[in-house]
Structures are given as structure tokens and as C-alpha cells.
Length: 180
Image 1 (spheres, rainbow, N blue to C red):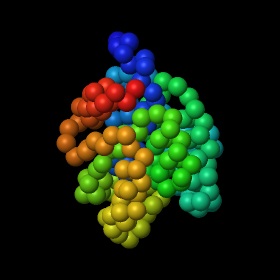
Image 2 (cartoon, one colour):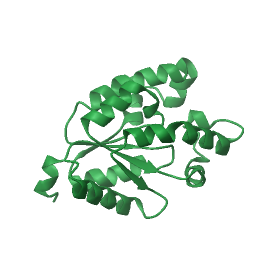
Image 3 (cartoon, helix red, strand yellow):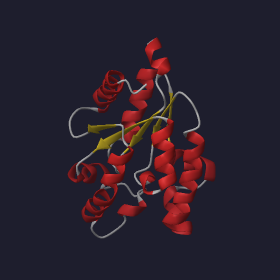
């Protein structure tokens, strides 16, 4: 049973690149805390009745980002939540503001090689449907890493440990830092 000390924790938002493990780690973290877990990409799909690749195809990245901001505003207004965000959520200033001011943001830093291992067969990642996915991941990390770091209250490296261990590490870091 989750500890009473967890009751005072704010929402926890996981940010990072594709393949960082935000959804998997987030589920474990929510279980540890006895909280609801949501994935913003899954929530966008649920609300629109369309897949993210379809939204990208029909509306482009701009259309998707607009939908993402609306959903993020709603989700970050809730309480007692662990939220895994999409890899590009930090590209929009409004999203960075929602995340940074409405909870504790944890950046799951993941080297490109590990991202590639985890995503190379996934056809549901529109930004990786290119000739050279590794270069795309490098380019995205170069652009987004400073944004992840800017919004993050804590940075956790995901290249070591299983998802459950990473969730426990995140909880220890948040509790020891007084981010609640």
C-alpha cells in the first residue's frame, strides 16, 4: 500500500525522447504511488479516435502539436497523476510551462543507441519513418535535449536498470530533493 507521504507529492511528468521508457517506467511509478497513470499520446488517440500516424499524415506535425497542447493543458490540471508525455511535447512553449509549473518533471535521458534499439521496429512513430532513423534520433536529441533539460526538475539516465528500478530511483530522487 502506498505511503501517506506520497499524498503530498505533486503530479509527476516524465519527458524524454522516443524509446526512453516513459510509458513503462511511468506505469511502475504510478503503481508505487497508488496513482493514476496516463500517457499523453494514448490520451490523444483515445480522444480523437485516430492514431498518431494518421493525425500526422492528415494534419501534419503542426496539427498534432496543437492537439497535444490541448490535451496536456487538461491532463496537467488534474491531481494525483503520473503522466508520460510524447517525445516532442517540449517543442511548444505552452507545454513547457504547463509541465514545469504544474508538477515535478523528470527527464529520462536515453542515449541514441538505446533509443534506436527500442524503436527500430515501431511503425507508430511517424518521425522515424525515414531512410536513416538513427540520424533522425540524433537530430531530434540535439534539438530537444536542451528543452528537456530546461523543463526538468530531475534528470535520470535510463541506460542502466529495469523499469521498476528506474521508477524506484525517481521516487527516491523526488522524495530526497524536497520537490513536493
